[in-house]
Amino acid sequence: MTAPRIAIGGFLHETNTFAPSKATYDDFAHGGGSGRMMRGAEIIETFRDVNAAISGAIREGEAQGWNLRPTLFCATSPSAHVTEDAFERIASEMIDRIVAELPLDGVFLDLHGAMVTEHHDDGEGELLTRLREKLGKDIPIVVCLDLHANVTAKMFDMADVLESYRTYPHVDMAETGLRGARALGRMLTGPKPEKAMRIAPFLTAIAWQCTHADPARDLYAKLEELSGQDRDMSFNMGFPAADFPECQMTVLAYGPGADEAADKMMEAIEAAEPAFKGKVWTPEEGVAEAMRLAAEPGRQGPVVISDTQDNPGAGADSNTTGMIRAMAKLGAKGAIGNLYDPEAAQAAHAAGVGATVTLTIGGQSGVEGDAPFTGDFLIEALSDGNFEAKGPYFRGKVMNMGPSACLKLGDLRIALVSAKAQMADQEMFRQVGIEPTEEPILIVKSSVHFRADFEPIASHLMVCAAPGPMAVDPALLPWQRLRPGVRIGALGPVFQPETETA
Image (cartoon, rainbow, N blue to C red):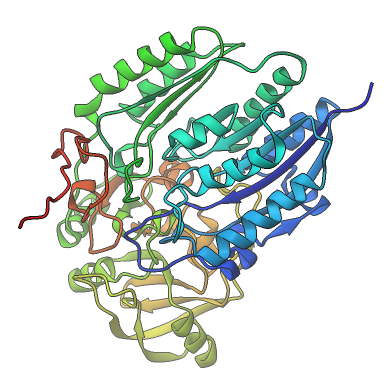
């Protein structure tokens, strides 16, 4: 019997249409913290043992004896729109490489599900439509998606199964790929499944989507109950910073009883709406509270603060200075990272370890209420930015943050880097000589992913809202193109498009 020929590839981007910087072809080519663009067999060798959806598909495919045909894989940090040039070049090459592998028995793609380009609201839907036009309707296509996918009607129609992560922080990416590959395997020997999609009437802030806590914890337990050996289900909490009509939370069901299962899951989601809220601190109030908590007798571990509105994992540039100002003003002891400023990092390297230099850092994105910060910094440590991540989220990935430094200002240490990736791994501090477990306060430019590696060492977790491009409350964003009637945030205002007046 001939081994099934399965084409595999990936093209991942999470688009914040309100963010300051777009994703160019070079961003995908070099990848930053996401890793550079790869083609052919290198994809299999690189991803076999890391935490990525394509990794689970590779392992399952090899176990099933498939003839895997790797095509192209690329990803880059979340940002504003993918440029037209980048999308067209990458999409065309990926499709050409898949078509070149015909005849095929199936296709597995690792996508994000929230890509918006300069010329298409629905990047993944456009990619899948073009691919389906080349392959026809019979070849099974399975796509793994991020839990934050804004699943569109076109994506749902063009793919036979969409399989999404079930954890946030995302520690089950490889497991999701395995589920997706098994769904593909069933279609190699049997019919395509019946399917159903439901859309929630509200959006939720990413800060309250963590699956370590309710309501998400209970909702994903419900999802597990409704899934089964012959039924695949996904709950996509969506990415609430993409200004187009299909920015939305969705439920997907595949297999016997898909419609009934999708209805039950959506009922549970709608009932949980009031619980998608939490406490948010201003920078100075949050730092003052963190100082109080850090001084408590018997405290074990640092107080960890999420600088959620400057999360590069949600399209921010990781360079706002609001939390630095609050720490400096209150004389707080601790560390913050990562601050993305290649020019300042270069200046630190030029000055050398032990030098004290006047630097102006951060604040380059033009965010309202934010500005560059000037101070006299001690260059405490320097690094080339290369290290292996050890936490559950980036697990096993070799990171390249570019020239990096530890800047010391009074009792505050700042992890300064030359590449963008959210602070979701303790090694990001250690690579510039900061031991996170010894700091009383840690400030991380991340919304939820940091919890996978930092929650185990934290005495307390807090969320602060310094000025930044990723609003902690979706209702604060200047929406123009959402679908009419959707609630912007849990129990939030109802969106109605502005009407032109005569």
